[in-house]
Image 1 (cartoon, rainbow, N blue to C red):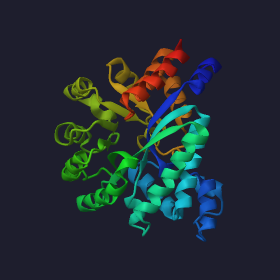
Image 2: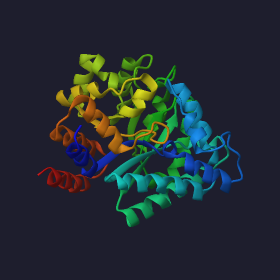
Image 3: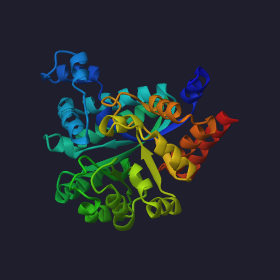
Image 4: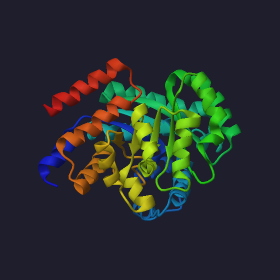
Length: 336
């Protein structure tokens, strides 16, 4: 890859649609929050903590991921976490981001739902005012917890529903199919939420789970969804419905030893509305630019293909049409 292409990617206006805010908790901030909250971490320093980030599958990542959340206790903690991500995203010319948060991972520790969302929300307000980056929140249910717990969480969210654009499903997919949560998502739709779901890469029953998302849950979007290419009728139906896919190359490489860059290129060529995102960038080192650069490098994507990835992102976002048009004009101007 030449410097011209790197510069093109770095300066390109971007939208990120698959970012777990808890997954942006960098070791330096984790130590700072631990000290503020009088907690002792099982690591001597940031370097030792980073050295422990050796994941070879989804469960091994999740074990470290949930352990790291223990430092998030107060509204100030969630504010600092979110602002740190927004500053990093802004530095990479991300203009818009849809941010996942996992309330059950906090309420199960005795942290109130209100504490979590108020801290994040204040950072969203300040981030838009001070940095010019617009964001919306997507609340995820933990699929390795019960559907009753998910429904309880949905009820807790209703007083804050104007702050949340959609709901999703994440965490360990094994033996936790989308249909397990069908009634929860039906209620979420009635409450006016947009719907997305994780269909992780190369997992057991990946194809069945993607099909459940389409036929049983009727999602508005699919997170990951790389394995949709394994079934011709499936990816054709995704194209027909115009559903977006939020793919995360660097995290793919950590959990399945493959960036799935080839699959991203193929999806572009088939007219699928594929996007590139950073997922959990503190644990899978690499924010938006790094993810885009690695895909371009592996598949030698053209400038127009890189633009198309961002055009897809703005188009499948949950912005209103006027807002989409504003960002797409900026992208087209950049490409002119």
